[in-house]
Amino acid sequence: MVAAFQVGKAPPALPSIRDDLGATLEQAGWLLSVINLMTALGGMAIALTADRIGHRRLALFGTLLAGGASLAGAFAPNVESLLIGRILEGLGFISVVVAVPSLLLRLTRAADQRLTMAIWSTYMPAGSGMMMVIAAIVLPGTSWRIVWLVAAAAAGLMAAALLLLAVPRRELDPLPVKPRPLLSEMKEVATSGGPLAIALCFGAYACCWFAIIGFLPTLLTERLGYSTFTAAIVTAAVAILNVTGNLGAGWLLHRGVPRVAVIVGACLSMSLCAAGIFVSGVPDILRLILAGVYSAVVGVVPGALFTAIPVHAPRPELAGASTGLLMQGSNIGGLLGPPITGALVAAGGWPSAAWLTTAALAVAAAAGLFLHWRERHKLAP
Image (tube, rainbow, N blue to C red):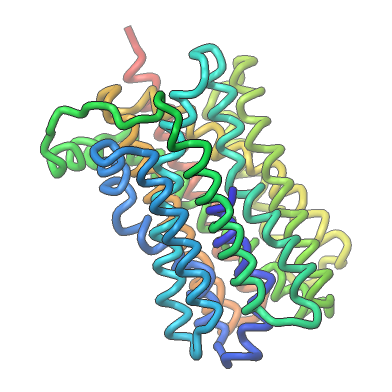
């Protein structure tokens, strides 16, 4: 969740950054999404690296890197310097995200692992939403630079906690790993239909999610006239509502609801909510209600996809690499969503963003259908 602070701090701070550094709407989109660049380029490789150097070491490294980059970014003199800092924050973020699941599973009983992973899947909406609230409190009367310093301080405190509480835990010591060709494992996962469908589905979901959450504060301030504080609080509430979907997916799947029904049903029904956030003629209060409903319901998609990893990994020992590919797909979507939204809005106004959300959720639904077909084929006797 602290790693996700690096994601959540940017949307509420965009108006302040644009005023201070003169960032264009397109540059603002990249400031939102460039943190996903390192994951988009090498999520699977980083996941496989964690197996070799130790998950605890990678989590500590990522926390320190994200905190250091946020601290340096607070003193950035221009947009270009801030973008470089955001890339380093992205590397720190993904280092933590791919390392933590294995550590959690080693600390929990087998009977509790499904619940543990369901709770872990809330890290993004819970962490980023929490930081949005903090930013909303800090921003009035200050600037985005203070928000960056707060995120850096949180990462520093978390690094200290890891050193004091996680390092002494012997059950978290690195496990012996047999040397295996890294590229061959990456190829095996990347050419497997199941993990590819999961990554595509998560990528399309993330493209829509980051497009909405990333630009919701700007939409609220520029089009609806909300104050920066109110816009940040509303966006944080919308993001945190995603947690209910994350946990709801585990509840639905546990009660026998098919994964395809969870994914496809959420994507197709929520495409109308997502479009309604941007199109003209929708009353302001209804626009906010649609954003909340969208976030809460569509949150079942990540929960359903994370539970699909053990089923579709080519081999059990490649579950970590398959998770890395999932995160890679997610971050490619997060990388592309805000800049495309910024370009669409700059060209045709806010209603144009509805084209992206509709197309992205349609792709996610199609990937969910393929995943269902693949799952039936793989599990058939």
